[in-house]
Image 1 (cartoon, rainbow, N blue to C red):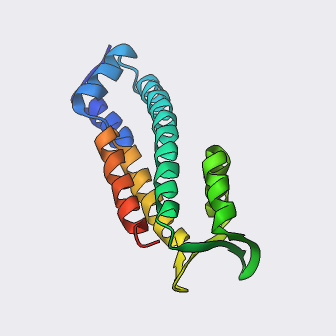
Image 2: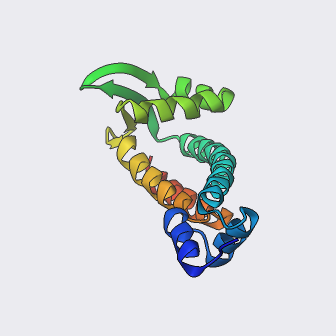
Length: 167
């Protein structure tokens, strides 16, 4: 069982965990760096899945609040500048309220396939949801590389809520 600073540093560099967590992982893996990395990776994936589910629900709640503010008239989905879907907000609001998982998956799929999501306000102003979402997804990815906490997730969601307050 070889637990030394060099091995701890290797684990910390690759996973972003603390010295204590890296040492514990090495101890549990009998000093085997690869086994410790695999164990930490599995642990982080389950945390990520749990936190992503929690975050998805919170994003849907914030989206509902934005819609309730009432100054959004429609949601438009475009791919290669061609309008694929033009949804009046009343239909979109019903979808968000009745089918949160489908709404979250739809937004996620739109982002992955590079579909542009536009929010049209009552005054005619068009907001590009992709720009806001990509920034927040980047923040979320960076946060998840470390040791995520509820406070980190709440901070990102609060920022998203603040940026969406103009919807």
